[in-house]
Length: 317
Image (cartoon, rainbow, N blue to C red; front, side):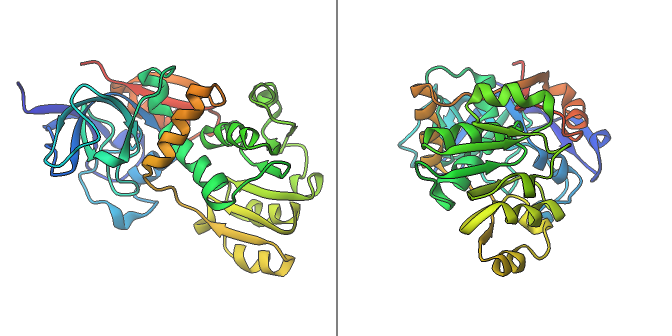
């Protein structure tokens, strides 16, 4: 059996033009790790930021294989692994924010960064779920502890994280308001959003009020403006806090709370998402499917922020 594999690699930091298809050594699992034969790899905004070395540059060096969302089949297990076995179909977001090398035919990962794929998901859908799904779960459940009857505002609600956050908040009994351009409103209503606001024509900060939890996907002035939608004591959980200067100070001035957020590998969270899929309360929407060789096109399309749901790369073995 060959000891090499195909992968998309960045040899110089930059845009999509820096993504190259190369042949590299296949990684071998260390103790407590598994090797996964990747069938599909999800695409996320962090992928093109990382390829430009913008986000968390201290975590990576060149050459760099992008990608964190993976779905595939366990092909080998390292010493000490007891939870997975060769042949298991798994999905996950290993090592984040450290490199996982998801845009490749094989990856290695700590066994407990992965979860078995639930019934009802194929490899493509499973690859679209981990990073966005764990972000939504950890923001809503672990950080904000959303409860029945609360009012939740999800910004960028038709995006990768947003469309899953709408469903998770609804499943927890919240009243959900989502922001999106007008063409995406029907999609959000199908997911269960109670209200949808066109952020291109309305000032969300004045149109919405008495919110308990804001899931904030945008940084800069928008991030601080959305604090005004919160009721006293409400919380804004920001996925862009590092790019929102003055967020904590403005929250304190208004008598509300704000916290930065960065998703972490989390097997318990993956299992919770898998359970929701099996119960029929969560579905992941895949907008675009491309072969691994078109990773550059996936980055070009995704960076325009027009995608509904997720983009996934397929690998042919």
